[in-house]
Image 1 (cartoon, one colour):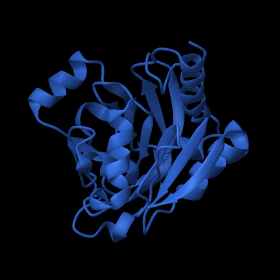
Image 2 (image 1 turned 90 degrees about the vertical axis):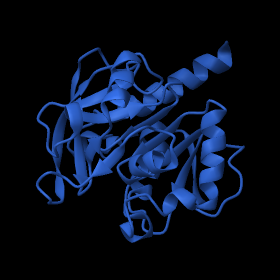
Image 3 (image 1 turned 30 degrees about the horizontal axis):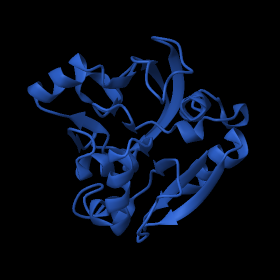
Amino acid sequence: MKFAVIVFPGSNCDVDMYHAIRDELGEEVEYVWHDADHLDEFDGILLPGGFSYGDYLRTGAIARFSKVMQEVVKAANAGKPVLGVCNGFQILLESGLLPGAMRRNESLKFICRPTRLKVENNETIFTSEYKKSEIITVPIAHGEGNYYCDEETLQKLKDNRQIVFTYENNPNGSLEDIAGIINEKGNVLGMMPHPERAVDELLGGADGLKLFRSIVKTFRNAVVV
């Protein structure tokens, strides 16, 4: 399986993502600059964390207009797995690939620490390697991770089982403890915690590796079928 790690001016977790795919997962991966005009050769798209365009205006708001995002939308509409982590999640929200918005953390402070998550839905292409309701530890590092949506959208998320991860102890005020959601189609996941920083026990834990393994397993099963 071949992954693209999208790099925006200000991305700073692209190397972590690249390492997770190449060195821990053993799959093919390439960096793709924000002005790329095609992603056809890639099987999966990864939007890393960081501070795209310095987070000016609003997190993810400028990156949403990058040339490559037209191709990310195209890949998502074609059913390819798209994962956005932290700033990547914010960009997916701004681009309309996922519903809702991000607000400043309730504390108005940047938070960086390991966080316990609950796997709410293990029947997605991103979570099939986890057990239902499994508790995992994945680090967070954000100042605007307070997820919000209106009541109608929240009900849809619940009805369609689009809430994939929740915080065990909510660190940022996120609505309903939401840490990660998928689109209705199930191939686009946005999450604030960083699974790419939890892929080796030397890093303090490897709970995030199962997420990437889930993507590859689903892809290979589809190819065999």
